[in-house]
Amino acid sequence: MNEAELILFDQSENCTVYSIRFLTDEDSEVEKFYAKFKESSKYNEDFERIINVLMGMLDNGALERFFRYEGKMSDRVVALPVLKSKLRLYCLRLSDKIIVVGNGGVKDTRTYEESDELRGYVLSLQQLDKLLREGVHDGTIAITENKIETDKTFEL
Image (cartoon, rainbow, N blue to C red; front, side, top):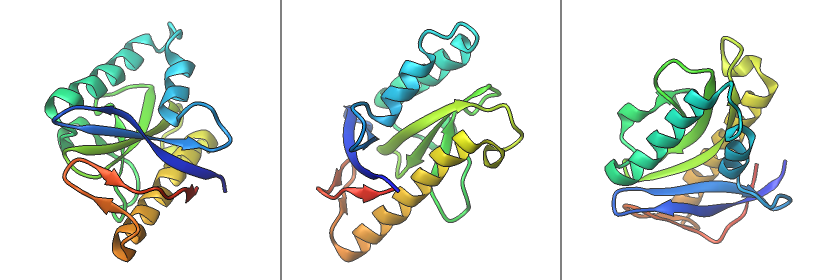
């Protein structure tokens, strides 16, 4: 388990994008994903598609149709892109106006559970989702229409 914080990654009138930053790391999870694949010619098309969808959310909101459901029925873990792709970027979709972007990687197994790397990203987001729900319930976290208000760190 590592301590992490939510950081504001990008924001528009239609969508607020957060990411996770582990306190032991300099970069957020989405920045690590970007660094991993920005120079990859093998996955360039898939990477560009994911980045374009993320940028489109700033204009249009984090609409359900942009994501594929990945986690369990009880959590809000989703992945980009919806279309067939070798890359996955895992997120928490809290509403049409709020997403938390995690990390991702190459999906070369049938399911994310079969990949240690991808399973780790999904488990972190599932844990964060659980902690966010608990924080809202106990009043230590407020989630408004387009903002997560907390100064908490999270054990992920």
